Length: 594
Image 1 (cartoon, rainbow, N blue to C red):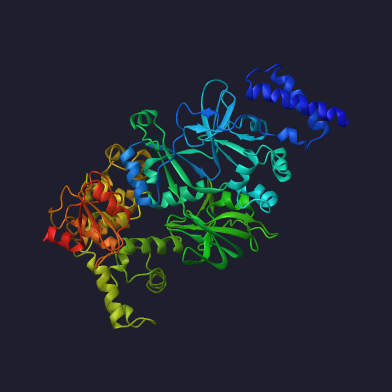
Image 2: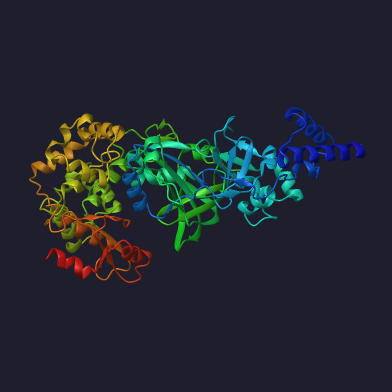
């Protein structure tokens, strides 16, 4: 038998050389496959089956494999989306593996972008996720190892999954653990745009809450990631946006400088949001991530709960990165699995499943109502009313609407435990000030809590229509407004009719709106802000700019007029000099409007 094995080894090596190096095959693919299968039967772990054949660095990319431009803040992503101007974008994970290209049976690494390494000999050992083309078409993808496989089989040999990929795929002779990984089909070649990829409406990406949900959901895959990739879906836009020597302009990466730690689930609680959606929250053993203490982590949706079998006692890997709320990226289940609730935790109404979410559709649910009221006054900057105070007043005064808060009197609040004359006066005056020119029209529209309509959308709608006519708008009226697509338009028309009774009551009370632009001295000017602030916070400076008719931009571009720079201004200061943008201080800004 040993002689037969040696004969097969020699034949396989010969025909690999003839095919991959000499480009002069002597047998058909089917005949070669029979040799391989025969050796597998006799000696499944034979190193010949896993040798990398071919010259290193011998593939020239006719079209360069470019990098992806990166962004690190949500504001920069918003600006890129608007500037790019597509109606839908392709969203997919940014895999942390080894980029590769496949064409005409040749698999090659990215290399330096112009010349890569031929690793076609490894193709037969990879688990292909997606579909390889038959003809001249080029597909790009990522060679990567699932986290679950790496943790179980390779963590003791390699520092991380990326190192394991390089060690297994590019080595002429593969170590035993690498051979096992290839035999197990534990090394994947994921084809971009096919696996874990989906199209998302621009309006959803421009909504901060939806962005957070999309981001968390996109990252819930069993692969090492370092962000997400956003691509224009319209080929006309792709063709219009020419590439630089470094990157394509029609795609961008949102990078996560993430910190991850493991913890243990102590409890799981169900909560009701203001729209009736049920959120399940894991209470975990306290951990420190990116300078913050994390004790509670959202469990995304019901699909996540069912898929991971999470429960009390489960070990969870928690990730926190930049602006993103901490979320779970990996679960090691315990014997206890969380039982998905069937009734609302607040009003006990029967819950209904809507796709991957559970919802309480009782409009009189006290938990929904209290959070609707909290959202209302938070949007109107009434800082004296927190959720606990709102819930207390609802119970004592039997309040069910934000309008009823406007009828509260100081003498009603003062006798209550925990309140005195000063706090009672602050609450009443804070509420009544919203009628006296303290808020803008777009702040009230945001406060109404119309589904899918946040601060940015509220501003764009009110730039086109007067506040008093909002309840009469049609879907057709709204389409075409910046940031408002068909879904948001339909949602607005449906929801505004229900919410309008609050707005109508305030109009009848004679509400006076704050003039949105105190002056137009900054009209037509765009400002960017960087560095440590002297007197005002970033939010206060943005407010000053917008109230004076100017526009704030998160990123510096050629169209930016001024950069307001404080201490430790960083790279934006250098970029401003390169783009010949005038750099000013906070005092200079104030002098422009006085």
